[in-house]
Amino acid sequence: MIDLIVFIIVGLIIGALARLVVPGRQTMGLLATILVGVAGAVLGGYLWRAIFGDSGGVEWIGSILVAVLILLLLQRLAGRST
Image 1 (cartoon, one colour):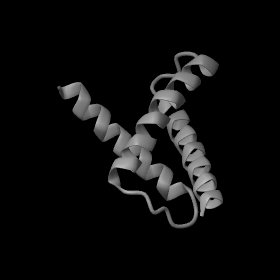
Image 2 (spheres, one colour):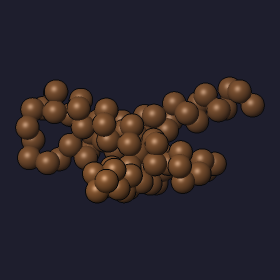
Image 3 (cartoon, one colour):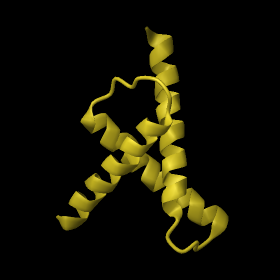
Image 4 (tube, helix red, strand yellow):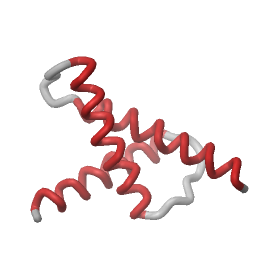
């Protein structure tokens, strides 16, 4: 249960940081921010380790970068549908 709570908190932090980096207004709610952050953390952390190996705990950089890419992709898709 604690792992799930930590997963949600990390997702919220990564998602919030991604939203701060991306210019413009994001109209997503808290749940969407958490989901973007969790996806960014999982994919970004995995890719960072695959590319750079064990880098001493700086996988969060890859997590934020991937979360920003996901957020930009979502904005682009939302812009086309309206």
